[in-house]
Length: 135
Image 1 (tube, rainbow, N blue to C red):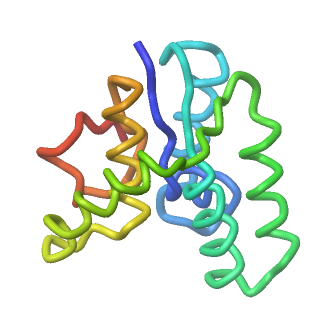
Image 2: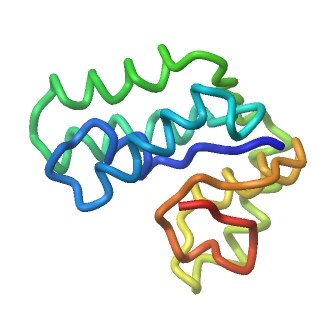
Protein backbone atom coordinates (compact mmCIF):
# COMPACT_ATOMS: atom_id res chain seq x y z
CA UNK A 1 0.00 0.00 0.00
CA UNK A 2 1.06 3.62 -0.52
CA UNK A 3 -0.33 7.05 0.35
CA UNK A 4 0.10 10.61 -0.79
CA UNK A 5 -0.24 13.23 1.94
CA UNK A 6 -2.13 16.32 0.82
CA UNK A 7 -1.76 19.93 1.95
CA UNK A 8 -4.65 20.04 4.40
CA UNK A 9 -3.27 17.18 6.47
CA UNK A 10 0.07 18.92 7.02
CA UNK A 11 -1.62 22.26 7.77
CA UNK A 12 -4.19 20.80 10.18
CA UNK A 13 -1.55 18.78 12.01
CA UNK A 14 0.34 21.97 12.87
CA UNK A 15 -2.67 24.13 13.71
CA UNK A 16 -4.37 23.03 16.94
CA UNK A 17 -7.35 25.27 16.10
CA UNK A 18 -7.97 23.57 12.76
CA UNK A 19 -11.21 21.56 12.71
CA UNK A 20 -9.27 18.58 11.30
CA UNK A 21 -6.30 18.83 13.70
CA UNK A 22 -6.94 15.67 15.71
CA UNK A 23 -7.61 13.52 12.64
CA UNK A 24 -4.57 14.94 10.80
CA UNK A 25 -2.30 14.04 13.72
CA UNK A 26 -3.76 10.52 13.78
CA UNK A 27 -3.23 10.08 10.04
CA UNK A 28 0.38 11.26 10.22
CA UNK A 29 1.13 9.06 13.24
CA UNK A 30 -0.23 6.02 11.39
CA UNK A 31 1.83 6.92 8.33
CA UNK A 32 5.00 7.28 10.42
CA UNK A 33 4.33 3.86 11.98
CA UNK A 34 4.19 2.43 8.46
CA UNK A 35 0.51 1.53 8.55
CA UNK A 36 -0.05 3.03 5.11
CA UNK A 37 3.07 1.70 3.41
CA UNK A 38 5.17 4.01 1.27
CA UNK A 39 4.53 7.72 1.86
CA UNK A 40 4.58 10.41 -0.82
CA UNK A 41 3.96 14.13 -1.09
CA UNK A 42 5.18 16.71 -3.58
CA UNK A 43 7.08 19.94 -3.77
CA UNK A 44 3.81 21.61 -4.83
CA UNK A 45 2.07 20.37 -1.68
CA UNK A 46 5.02 21.57 0.40
CA UNK A 47 4.74 25.02 -1.19
CA UNK A 48 0.98 25.14 -0.72
CA UNK A 49 1.09 23.88 2.90
CA UNK A 50 3.66 26.46 4.00
CA UNK A 51 1.83 29.25 2.18
CA UNK A 52 -1.61 28.27 3.50
CA UNK A 53 -0.26 28.00 7.05
CA UNK A 54 1.21 31.51 6.77
CA UNK A 55 -1.91 33.06 5.23
CA UNK A 56 -4.34 31.42 7.68
CA UNK A 57 -2.37 32.09 10.84
CA UNK A 58 -0.31 35.14 9.81
CA UNK A 59 2.45 33.51 11.86
CA UNK A 60 5.74 32.76 10.14
CA UNK A 61 6.66 30.36 12.97
CA UNK A 62 3.59 28.20 12.26
CA UNK A 63 4.37 28.22 8.53
CA UNK A 64 7.98 27.23 9.24
CA UNK A 65 6.89 24.43 11.59
CA UNK A 66 4.51 23.17 8.92
CA UNK A 67 7.38 23.01 6.45
CA UNK A 68 9.65 21.37 9.01
CA UNK A 69 6.99 18.73 9.71
CA UNK A 70 6.88 17.85 6.03
CA UNK A 71 10.65 17.73 5.58
CA UNK A 72 11.41 15.91 8.83
CA UNK A 73 8.71 13.27 8.60
CA UNK A 74 10.41 9.88 8.42
CA UNK A 75 10.04 7.96 5.19
CA UNK A 76 8.29 10.68 3.18
CA UNK A 77 9.31 10.88 -0.45
CA UNK A 78 8.88 14.44 -1.70
CA UNK A 79 8.30 14.15 -5.45
CA UNK A 80 9.42 17.11 -7.54
CA UNK A 81 6.98 17.98 -10.29
CA UNK A 82 9.03 17.58 -13.46
CA UNK A 83 8.10 18.65 -16.99
CA UNK A 84 6.09 15.49 -17.71
CA UNK A 85 4.10 15.74 -14.47
CA UNK A 86 3.57 19.45 -15.11
CA UNK A 87 2.08 18.74 -18.54
CA UNK A 88 -0.12 15.99 -17.09
CA UNK A 89 -1.26 18.37 -14.31
CA UNK A 90 -2.06 21.07 -16.87
CA UNK A 91 -4.12 18.66 -18.98
CA UNK A 92 -6.03 17.61 -15.87
CA UNK A 93 -6.50 21.22 -14.78
CA UNK A 94 -8.05 22.22 -18.11
CA UNK A 95 -10.62 19.44 -17.60
CA UNK A 96 -11.18 19.74 -13.84
CA UNK A 97 -10.85 23.41 -12.88
CA UNK A 98 -14.57 23.96 -13.39
CA UNK A 99 -15.13 21.34 -10.66
CA UNK A 100 -13.08 23.44 -8.25
CA UNK A 101 -9.75 21.62 -8.41
CA UNK A 102 -6.64 23.75 -8.15
CA UNK A 103 -3.52 23.29 -10.24
CA UNK A 104 -1.84 21.80 -7.16
CA UNK A 105 -4.72 19.30 -6.83
CA UNK A 106 -4.18 18.32 -10.46
CA UNK A 107 -0.42 17.97 -9.91
CA UNK A 108 -1.23 15.70 -6.97
CA UNK A 109 -3.46 13.56 -9.19
CA UNK A 110 -0.66 13.36 -11.75
CA UNK A 111 1.82 12.17 -9.11
CA UNK A 112 -0.69 9.66 -7.74
CA UNK A 113 -1.19 8.33 -11.26
CA UNK A 114 2.50 8.10 -12.15
CA UNK A 115 3.51 6.30 -8.97
CA UNK A 116 0.32 4.22 -8.74
CA UNK A 117 -0.32 5.47 -5.22
CA UNK A 118 -3.21 3.70 -3.52
CA UNK A 119 -4.71 6.45 -1.34
CA UNK A 120 -4.71 10.19 -0.93
CA UNK A 121 -4.66 11.35 2.70
CA UNK A 122 -6.81 14.43 2.28
CA UNK A 123 -9.77 16.31 3.66
CA UNK A 124 -10.56 17.63 0.16
CA UNK A 125 -13.81 16.05 -1.02
CA UNK A 126 -13.32 17.63 -4.44
CA UNK A 127 -11.11 14.72 -5.47
CA UNK A 128 -13.70 12.09 -4.63
CA UNK A 129 -14.38 9.90 -7.64
CA UNK A 130 -10.95 10.72 -9.08
CA UNK A 131 -8.78 8.96 -6.52
CA UNK A 132 -9.33 6.85 -3.40
CA UNK A 133 -9.26 9.22 -0.46
CA UNK A 134 -8.53 8.37 3.15
CA UNK A 135 -9.46 10.97 5.74
